[in-house]
Length: 369
Image (cartoon, rainbow, N blue to C red; front, side, top):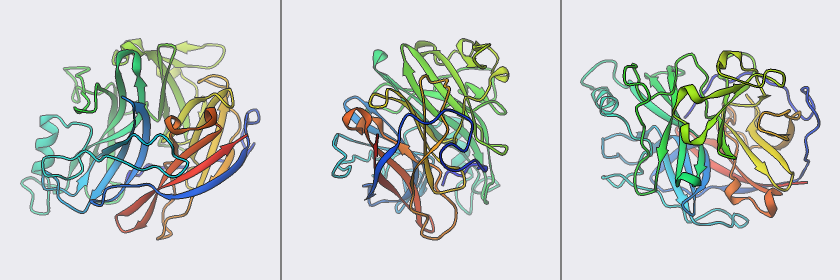
């Protein structure tokens, strides 16, 4: 599954500096496992958005019971969609797009070089050592851009070899998605670079932990994977210039505002590198939802603006622990396109291990006041 270097953070409501949250939790209800195709053994993630009149979902590493068109049972990412807009009785009717072999398909396309590398290193008796090495594309936040009839798909590019924790990120970028009948495009950003499709390189923030478009501006959060806390930086750019690196600006605090150098940016909140931020009409505030690092707690924060000031955290509910009693929950995500009563009722999912290379996504109904 998609592992990240998680770190300790404070627990409960009001444990960190910040104003009180603009909400409380009235109730939470576990609604069971999310529907998925029989060929899928497990997957994580679950960013979603309303796209082309459908609720469209993106997942990270996905394990299959069948081989795909390239002879593999491991996908770097997968996706599904549903037209079920009423989650109060569960979320159903998912369509799982398939590849040429009839197996669940990856969403993000690999370049010819990436695909050739993966095929040459695939299997125990591979053509080129080390066997099992691969380039992976992990999806991040999904931002609907209806003004241009498209979606922006954040993703990270990762080099991985067999073995626990044996991977490293080489950068991140944005794919442009123009319709459900085709894969997103990964435009070339810098033709002379080692990884020409990447907007941000190794050692730079991986924007796309959360993303949203407001008043023509794309806001994207980058929550760190190193250190003792998940501090989140915030960048923004005109949505129609999302792939122009020079057009990006980064929040450097109330006094300095938005600056051109990300290294001058200041964290706007502490959360997790899988995160959701969306405006909640019921609360009349922005709502952040994330999993407490190294725990089963799902947390909330509120703010008047994307840059804050963000409130102290509020403990919303406890996720069910993994059945094998190892690891923790790391990918709690709400689905704003399914919310009810202007955001008073939220539907949150998280992945949970149910065995070796087996997992499920649980659904929780969360009522706010």
